[in-house]
Length: 249
Image 1 (cartoon, rainbow, N blue to C red):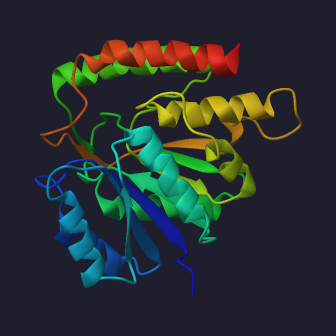
Image 2: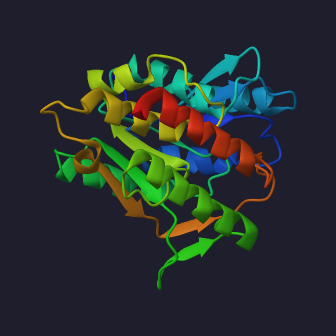
Image 3: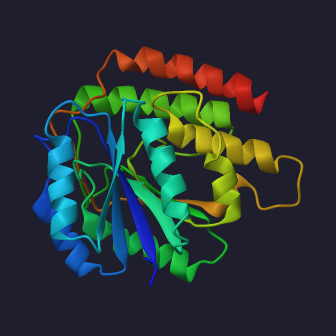
């Protein structure tokens, strides 16, 4: 039987941060979930660790090795296309460091199960009472500036485009959104939304604001060793400009 849910995990040199035991525990707790790890041309022991994880739980873990490093956006896109080919009900992607605990996936699925009009659920890192959102101050404030800029270029009141926890209803429409290579290396999240807006503009189809739901996460923790650095902020703004001119003008 094909998996009900396939979650893509992009990995680039994650040997010191990958938690194989946590993924195995998650697989046992959520038997309808299959994890598809995309090794994005890693140069450390990531490939060996992923192959070992697959051997331990082949029913729940698949691995795709990319020959060269293509960046997170393309690694995710490649994984989503492979996931969609298995015809699951839902596909998504999750950060390899598990900054968002896997248990939260249950809440994402419940939203899509209970609200058939929704096509996408995005995690949002919102610091509210009763929630545990731990993020370094510099990354938080740079992230808020970037998120505001993304919201403005998309003309969409989206709060957190870059959270690495997202789930989609598997469909031909989603396949069309990720069929072509992304123009940016890191901003695939935003390109998916921009492509959605572009594809449905002027049509009778439900618009982005009608089918995307942002779910405030109950828990998110900044894990040391992230590949995204403060100076990538400027590159990100350039990427936003590229997305705007390519899809939204």
